[in-house]
Each structure stands twice: as structure tokens, then as C-alpha cells.
Image 1: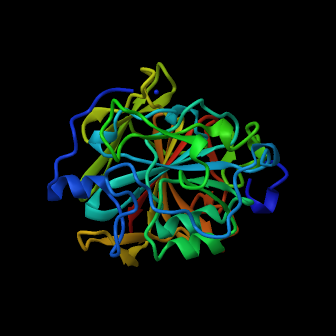
Image 2 (image 1 turned 90 degrees about the vertical axis):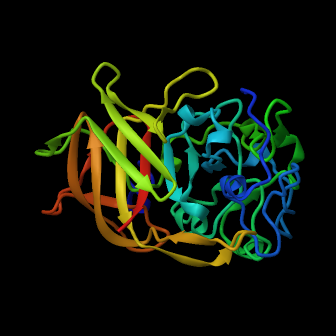
Length: 328
């Protein structure tokens, strides 16, 4: 599917955050002029010239939410309802997620964290997506304001966000999606380029795959009983606050260019920029097998196409898809 075929298309208590370099990295905030969230529950201001949210007029747009992914943020809420989960490397070699919702909306999603520059390129594949995040680097806000998306932050739509007093800030900000959308937009809004159907020919038997960042790792373990890949992060099973194991039907390990961006966090760490337009190799994990494939996204407004080496389209299994971006 894709732009070429658009028509088809709450929580536990955690220890207080220590005022140390390690914890600062775990916060994963940007800012040479100050962090996106100051650690006391005060997000940066929203981008200018943006009107308040009107849930009744956004039934056709996907909801994309930046989700905290460090140990202090676990367990997460609402992750299983996402149609697609993107994982990317951020400052200090840590990871962060972007969850995309189209076919269903959970009551609550979070913890919500700050945006990154590369999010803007990734989100161009969707038509006027609603982008929920806690804040952003002050120099990034003008770029967000100019992007063809509907940015939603606590400073703009306070009733859509709340803080959980049982958790330590900044890992305690949550979103109520129904304050931003009247209903789930449906599958046609998922202009990702992904195709679903029968598994391709070939592949190699694979029951476990680990993807490593400098300070984080994901492991996907095939469960024949569940017909899905059980997610673990840093050696710990990923379970949501409702006790459900996160288990996508398809996992994509996508090899991309990861370069320095123009932004740094308040410790001086550069924010990696993940390039999702271009082409390269990937591995698609489905049904207990791994398939070596090619990916291509010609321009930002396109979805990403996955093909075999001979050019045949590669189908994903029906259900949640995780795409983990790794440095080529």
C-alpha cells in the first residue's frame, strides 16, 4: 500500500530520577538552550500559530505519539494498540519509540516524550498526521510548525495530557487520544507502503533476533503459540501496564543512514538523525522466518516499499508491525 495506493489502504511506581549524568541521558531530552522537558513536568512551549485541537475534525488522520523507552519509563501504556511502532536511536545511544494509531485508539498512551528532527521526515508519509509529544528543542519548534502535521503538546491541549503522580517526572506524562481524535481513522490512513498477505517464498528459519544500539537493545523471540514476536528490551520482557506482552506479528530491521543532526541535548550529546528516505537492505521477520529484502522510499511523501532481491513485493503478516532503524 502507500501513497501510490492510498485508497487501499494507566501504571507502576518508579524510583525518583537521580541527578546524575546517567539519568540525564536516560531522560533523552534535547536542547542546547534547555531540555525539552525540564524534569519537573514543564514541557517546552508549543510551536506558534497552531490552533487548539478539534477532535471532531480529525477522523481521517493517524495519531503518532513519541513514547519514552528507558527503564524508568516502563511499563508503557497503550503500546499494543498501535498499528506500527518505529524504534530509533537517540542521544547517548538510547532508544525511543514512535507509535502510530489508525485502526484503534487506546484510552491512554505513554509515557509521552519529546520530538526529534528525523520524526518530521518519517511523518511525511501520512496525510496531515496528528503528532503528540511533550516538547522539543527550541530551535526545532519552528521546523515542526512549518511541517505538514498537526502538532499537539501539553502546552497547547492541556486536557489531553496528564501527569501520573505515582511516577517520577519526566517519565510520567500521558495522553488521552480521544481528546485529539473523535474516532480511529481506519486502515486507509496508514499510508506506510506496507503490504499484507501470504509470506514470501524462501527465507531462513529464525526464532530470535537481537538489535543493539550503543546503550539499548531489542530482542524479538518467535512464539509459535501466539503467532507473533515477543519483544524484550535490555533483557527484560516488554509488558504493558495492563499485563499484556508486546508481540508484533512482523518485525522489520531496516538498515538506514544515521548521521549527526544540528541539535544537541543539554549535556552536549548530538541528536542522531535517522534518514528514512532512500534505499537499502532490511530483514523482515514473520512466521518464525527471516527474509533478506530491499527497501526503497523515493521521497518523503511516499511510503516505504519492501521487495525481494528480484523485485517482488514482500508481504507482512496481519497485525502490529515494529520497524527498528539500525545504522547501515
